[in-house]
Image 1: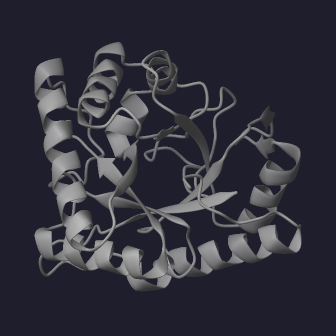
Image 2 (image 1 turned 180 degrees about the horizontal axis):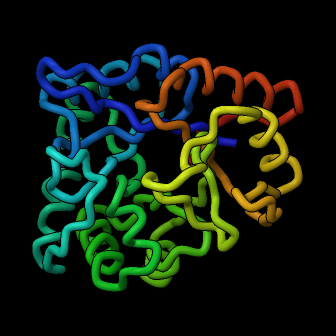
Image 3 (image 1 turned 180 degrees about the vertical axis):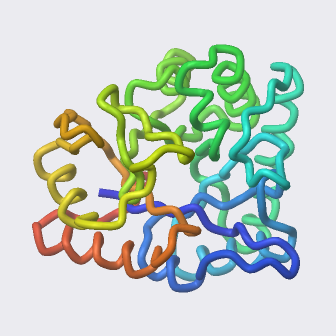
Length: 248
């Protein structure tokens, strides 16, 4: 099982999360590209930290929404979203190469992630940009999403993920952050062991969902994120689950 986290989200004097500590826990890092969070220095520091620890780097592409932290849907045109995604991929890959590594996969952030579950235009735009940039890059996304289906059809490798710190609806999508149950605080490690071993997770209404995932995500801005990630890794290891990145 791969463990990933959203990192590199500090901006200027605004510090968010403990990237250095999280990089000691996770095997893959979704690094902000500057559109929802992150700045050049943060990007440089985070890619260097990932390279030093052998953590795989993913481009965490987003809508252009610094004020909303990328958590607001933006009705951008397909050509513009293709260009915005290419711009972000180029930024993270360029800085990653200067740090001695490179972008190994792509994961949309926030509202773009959720939109690409069902929004055909924006899912297509992401796939078009990734194929144009590097048609060997895996796409990390929600199981059953339109994004992953279109990525597979385009010949891109796809990787499914589950969220350690987010609640699920009975249909397998995430509880919106504006609703009760969106963030999970209790029993997280046990939930992730059940997911990894049995392929099951409990939704907010008690429904048991079948969910197969290759990676588990912990959000870097969740309160207590580092301890949560450590507890998940320890519980998985104790249950005999091998922890390794999904990219070679």
